[in-house]
Image 1 (cartoon, helix red, strand yellow):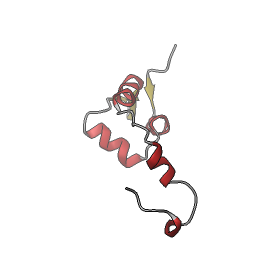
Image 2 (image 1 turned 60 degrees about the vertical axis):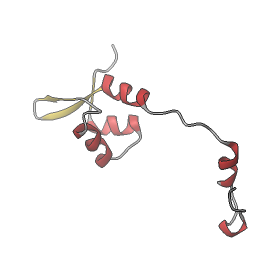
Image 3 (image 1 turned 180 degrees about the horizontal axis):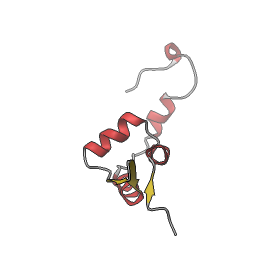
Length: 79
């Protein structure tokens, strides 16, 4: 059986965010939580739904190349 509830630590690791962002997402209603005794648990399904709702970036090879190694002063300006 898949895990239904996550600790805040597990949810942060799954999303790749810190505590502040996790609690912002909970406050905004983007993640759902439950109380298990005194412990806060985040619904695993809401973590999955949140991640699936995030936009997929369009990869632009020009912007990717601007971020390659080298000193900032060696890089040519964009455009």
